[in-house]
Image (cartoon, rainbow, N blue to C red; front, side, top):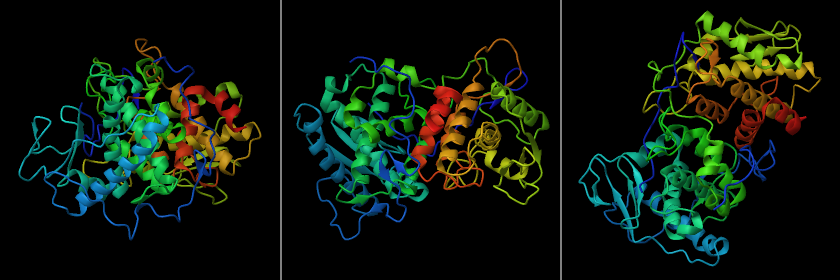
Length: 487
């Protein structure tokens, strides 16, 4: 987050790898959560974390020509992924797009970015840590030496499947052409949003148990897939209209969820007008000379600004606003949901500032996951989530259960939207959301124990898919949207 004039700090750029991408009528209505939001499902598929996620056991590996393959673990994983993706599009393309037949790619290429280079798409693979589709020779290539092992280590094997499904989404665009509303002059962001959407539609096929080589549960397993997008997002502050733009995680997750919920025809409808209507974060102000950092959450002045922001955001409710106290996140009755707790008897938000500071520290490149920290907005949003419980209490809403968790995520999203700087030249010195902050919210919402989407007892909503959707409703529709959806 940032305080304009006094401080001008935006979220740090965090990229494990820059993955993906080479090469109708507008959809009406305001962008918001897709489909009905159910705390126990992902777009209607029940959460069952006992179900495995990853390669199926006892299934014969796929066999087809892959140039330069070493047939090691990463290549087998990639080939099995491509095989299942082929099967999906062989069925779906004719069914969804007027009988059009799906044709396999002309080339599949494996390479080691640290090994002997090969030429793909008129480009040397030397030090090319990437996976990509190239329309020039209708190829998909992947780096088995660095990229795929890194993804597998950090997020598990389904992250590799995610990346390849995305690249195959570009191949689908190339085959569909006008039916997917793209051509060679189409802006990159449209192609990338569609490819993320096509990825989501494929993962629904996997989640429904229809893939030969892979399975995924729509709880923790799907959360890991979505969390991957926090690390392969565009740098915070990069314009969505820039050539090569993939979108921030908040936008990429929306596209994935749209495909997962509504299928590939929804993806093909994505165009510039529709994307512009829902891209939540714009490029960085070029005058923002200090962009790229994080505010210091332990600064008393910053915490005062946070409390002022929350009180102003919810003042029209008439609720008695709670005070924020750093007391180890414990209520007088001993209850606690660290690192932040709402204490209804005292009407305070008790916090553990030291623990929140760890969450506010963004991970460094190459760190194994989000447990080491996310960024300042994730920490602020956890406090805001507990603050919103006081608002819910004031209107007689239950503070326990899944609906309370969804309502909490929604109201936190409403507060986030309130902090958008609508008058950037008036020097108000209030706390404002920075470009990239919504990505930090997505990352927190997909944690195993998300507090943003938890009730007063700390019980989080089972579906990470639903948590993100609820937050998005609040961001786009405000607290009235939360009341309508989760009353």
